[in-house]
Length: 422
Image (tube, rainbow, N blue to C red; front, side):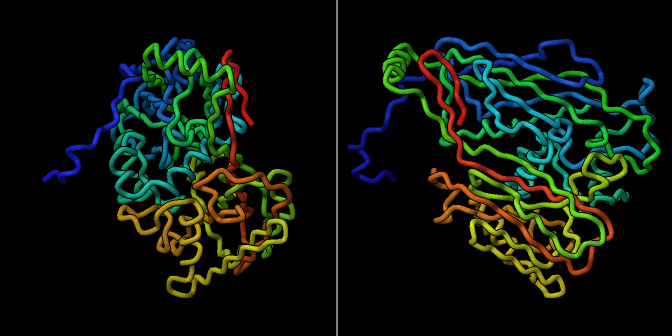
């Protein structure tokens, strides 16, 4: 039943948007079977406002013999890593009005995998993210018949063509409040592909006679079409000040922790303008640059017992007792609370107490003064961030420490459609 007073309420009327246009953009150049770069261009149009948060990348691929020809169905030695769509790209650059809008486009594959694993619950991975084939591994070497590796192998078996499709995860594709980019702003996306050892996974390291063949690629670019009155109003406002967009830019840094060293020390992880949040992860150094016989995105724990973030003299310390039931609960709680996620939502997340006990590890901290970095725009802070850690026993293999930092950033577009990123 409608409450009586609702009869007198006036709903807002959508009068400024007249339609929606989805542009399917093909690569600028012909797509070879093994491309190094895939580039797309969408020219700016009057009254077409870009929904940059929902750019969709689509490819059709298959696993084939390096020398040519399909693979036999009985060949079950080759598969792909757990997030194949985003693992194939090492660098994603986005240009608006031919100005680079991505501050740090490198290590796009690691950034995207960490994003998915720390934001997507089980329901999302089995629903919308199923188009990306997100099937997490329990370990970075498990290729058994009942493993996630085997599930992915069945999808790609016998050189079947597989469609992969998902949202681009460059930082500029996360504008706050879902803001639209102004009309008449051309969009160019340049994707540099990673070596195949970052996304192909073989049971045998000597099996290198397989390639991922690309059959088709598209970029879906959504626009909202406005009316003339809205355009006139926007142009009048732009004479006073530029259009301002807020988002979180991201930077990934990598440090090597040497073998047989029980204490982890990074005296200056970040210097200058401080990030609002920092995510900490580790991978085996032998896999960091790609390893066809293992998963490069296996974020290992390696017996880490203590981890401390030092930010301008302020300390955030985490203790992990893996011999104690639920001994890593504070790390899990901090990761989701500091990233602004609801720890208790029903879907669950990939990284939880159980996954930490099984050897997977990611930690995150909010470094803003009022601990609200995910909700508001904070004043810029400057200084240094150092990291210290202690392992239960000295690691027997060298590790790569991956630090994923997010900064409060701003993009401005002037009346002449000049783009500036700060």
